[in-house]
Length: 187
Image 1: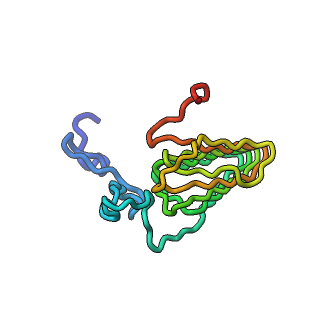
Image 2 (image 1 turned 180 degrees about the vertical axis):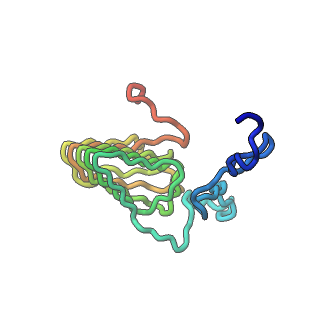
Image 3 (image 1 turned 30 degrees about the vertical axis):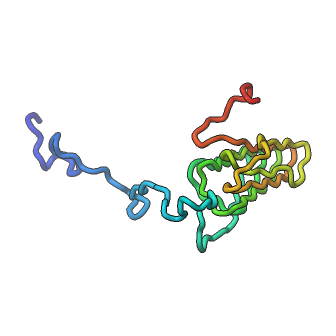
């Protein structure tokens, strides 16, 4: 069989020429197949002259607590995510990282309860956030924070309650986009 292939012998989904490009096929239809619109902050909520809180005011928010559980695993929440007033972290032989630098905080106080054994929990907050660490009960554990005792009155506050054994809970302050310094460069 020689010569040019006939059009009926070609696959119907294949483009016929270099100028004919078909759009990519989507298997799942509906909202999941659509692109997410770009997010932009709402500039009209707070007048520029009034010193309002640095957290958005929500009306009718669910306020339901968030529970994160990891056994022999890793949990990592970074980027833009909504943080309820109460977060519970349960871990066993696991690592948890909660990056709150770009998160949407909906209350003036965020309470994180950490229940863990043989685990690490690291919470990253932006500068100016007040931190209360040391509540709870822990056995053979390490609780550490680099909070200097000076908080911005317009920012939200973090309260950490740690209940654990043979575990590590750490709160560090970093600006958005700043990478964590290596252990040998920390002061």
